[in-house]
Image (tube, rainbow, N blue to C red; front, side, top):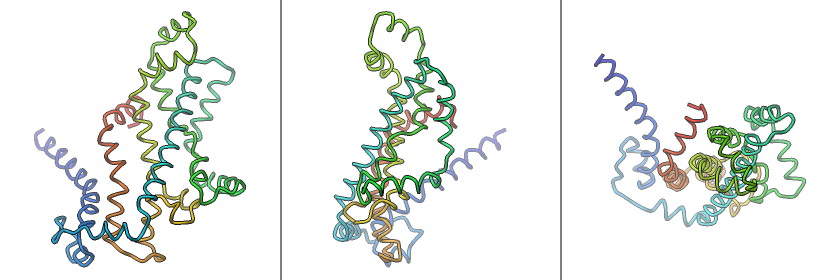
Length: 271
């Protein structure tokens, strides 16, 4: 029994190391000289320690503008997804209308539609409205998300219906019921879903790659290709510095709100 116990602990530790090592690798090499990064790749302690990669990054690209673009795009997408998911989940949970189950099934089924299926139609629509190389070209196709509807619907189903019915009997408006009764209860699920949406939008690469052309409109994941692609050459340590900046904000948000994220997925039946 003890041997089995130790085995599973060792296995978990190995998986944790495998998951954390790429982050440590990126942070370490971002503070190394380029030659040192290739000669001491496995060594995670920079020797000598240098900030030249971050300085070169600032001199090569409009880093502040690109970071702001990424933040604006991720924030707007997150805000719209949360609002549409909350309203849809409330309607699907507490309103009675024809084909309610069918509507819910159709919405949830869109989760399983690959991005490649909708990519070309979305591109043609955005191109028609002359929104190529615009942040709105990235944002508009992502204003709603079925995963958010699913998770918030599951959270609202845990609210006792007599609580909502009592509020309706007291002639409280639907808006006030959502604001004063439902929202405080589902706030943990709402918070974790918002963080999840923000991280997905922050790390998005393929769709911004199709939409954005100029460096001034780039997001951080797109800027990374300038240092690892054949067009921009390969500057390994500068690319690691940009990787650290790119992952810093989502990682901090996840560490702060990880309890809410894990609880939401668990309550939604997603393991």
